[in-house]
View (tube, rainbow, N blue to C red):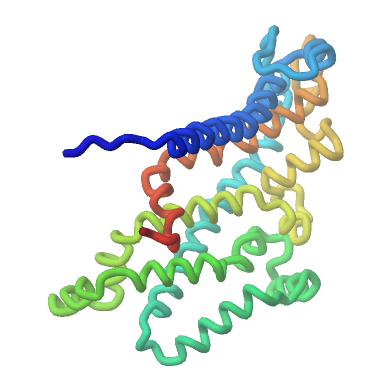
Length: 294
C-alpha cells in the first residue's frame, strides 16, 4: 500500500480546524463548569472571585436546601414523565406516518406530503392553538405538553426519506416469506432504522425536557409544573421557592441566592446529559442522514 503524504496547505487546514474546534469546545464547556463549581461554593467565594472553576471551600448547602422539600423532586418526576411518554408518542406517530408515506404507490401520498410541508410554513398561531387545547379539555393536564407536538413535520420528512432509501429487495424477500406490513415494519424496517430513531429520540427528548413555554400557557397547577418552569420561577422570581428553611436544622445557614440558582441549573441539566452516552453509537451516524455523500 502506497504511503500517503500530507500537503502543507492540508496540514495547515487540519491544525487550524482542530484549534478552532478545541477553542469552541472549551468556550462551550467552561461556563457549565463554572456553574457546577459555583453551586458548591460559599457566599464569600462567590462575592470575592468573579470566575473560578474549582471552589476553594466545597459546600453542599445549596443542594441540601433545594432538596429540603419535595418541590424539585416533583418537578423532576413531571419532566421525566413528559420526556419519556412524550418521546414515545412522538416516535410512534412519526414512524407510523412516515412508513406509509415512504410508499410511492400510496393513494393521495402527494396531497398528504403537501399538507405536511404547508404546516411547516404556516401555523395557526398562539391564540387558536390555546383555544383548541381548551376545547379538547387538555388545559391543566400533562397531555397539553405532549399531544399538540406529537409529530414534527421536519423530522417526519427526514424519517420518510430514510425509509425510502432502504433496499426494496428486503421488502420483497419478506413478503415472499409471508411477512405482513406490520411485521415488515417491526422486524425489518425498524431494526435497520436504529440510527435515525436514536437521533430523533434524542432530539424529541431534549425538546420535551427543555420545554417550559407550553407549561406556562397551559398548566396552572404548580404541582404539575415541569422542572424547567420551576427553574424559571427560582432563577427569575423567588429563590425561596426552592426549599424550606423551617424543615432544616436550626444551625443551617441559608446558602447564597446565586449558589441556589446554580444548583437548580445543574439539577435541570445533568439528567438529559446522562441520556446521550446511551445513544452516542447511533447518533453520529444519524445526524448525517440526508447529507451529501461523495
